Length: 60
Image (cartoon, rainbow, N blue to C red; front, side):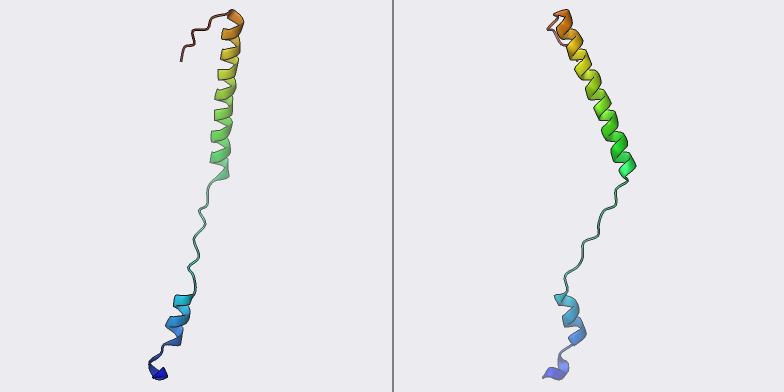
């Protein structure tokens, strides 16, 4: 009965498949996050200017 047993296929089934790592371009991430930070900084400056003027009607 053991003659029909396929050792190669059994060992391949028992091994777990490795997940492929996704490679992201770090430059694009940095560029995106830096631009978002710049926009956020502009937004905060706008809020400070509005508060300084005493105008509480915010425009988006």
